[in-house]
Amino acid sequence: MDRRFFLRGLAGAACSVTAAPLLTSVTFAQGAGLGENRLVVVILRGGMDGLDVVRPLDLPDFARWRPSLSEGSLPLVGPFALHPGLSGLSGLWRAGELGFVHATSTPYRDKRSHFDGQILLEAGTGMDVEAGASRDGWLNRMLQAVPGLRADTAYAIGREALPLLAGQGPSRSWTPEVKLTLSAQSQLLLDHIYHEDALFRDSGAEAMALSEALSLAQMDAPEAPAQDQAAMPGEDRPHPDIDRLVDFAALRLRAETRIAAFSLNGWDTHRGQRAALNRPLSRLQRVVLRLRAQAGAEVWGRTVLIAMTEFGRTVRENGSGGTDHGTGGAMLLAGGALRGGQVLGAWPGLAEADLYAGRDLMPTSDVRAWAAWAMRGLYGLDRAVLEGAVFPGLDMGARPALIL
Image 1 (cartoon, rainbow, N blue to C red):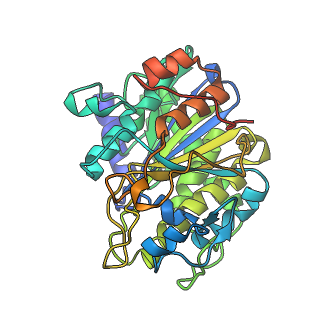
Image 2 (image 1 turned 180 degrees about the horizontal axis):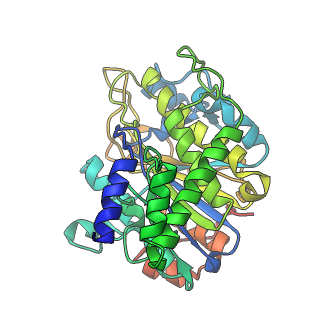
């Protein structure tokens, strides 16, 4: 029997994949060249409304544009207040482990397509990506710039890696709904067949070890409270798919992994945004809080999480109580290595003359620059590499007070 054919058949028999629009694969990279710091990138698919997440409540124009979307928020700094759906992060804000960037965007303009916007966000290039520019992801190009990196072992069974990490740099992907469960007899058979094949023998052994370690980690985790369908905004509550994903990410980050990336869907809020935004915010908050708890103080203290989206949404709410595709938006930053407690970025104003195309928050910075400064602060990458190879054509601008 062909051993590779056997492995594929065995994996198919032993694995169970549940496909759902809110589930995602998670991608990792590791290597001595990155030192001890960790970077977690979360892509918020659908266009998160930064003006609702970080609300400029003290500005009179805000209530004029958004009469039904401007109540009940947690004060931050200056005119800004945090959406109550993220109020569970208030302790991180006070501890300096949470921050935001406002009025920021990729170079994408005017076409307002989720597909094109996400391609540009993950490619990390300018608008030339639509004309056939390189389609590898900016995080993968960063890995290509660091010598001595290697991929995680070949335990990934499931979905492809994010475009963010697509390319020649070393990485692997894993899907939380894929479970490697072998009977004792099957495992003995697998060990026997692959005993003389070092690549498959070692990879299989590590896959089983990782599966067992994740199961033990989940057994040791505190029991989550029962799901409450009437949970209040900002309450930390379990999301089983998120918890599985974050638990595995934390397991790897406590070991040799230094880069993790995944995505969260559900941010397209054309209708009834006041209610519709609560669930994706609850999931994002859960990612941050559970990662902090599961990673442990030492790892969290060396971690920065960046959550970014393909574009913001219109300043004016629409007739169905939602918002439409826009331009300027917001980024969420978290982690023990972050210089938090700040809302970064130049604020453009909300007067009609200040808006982009008369309808959107004017972008005053490039999301790529914030990611580049985070990587420079965490890993010491040369500015020329970041502006030339990782984000071609980017001008990073002045150094912000971003990383401790």
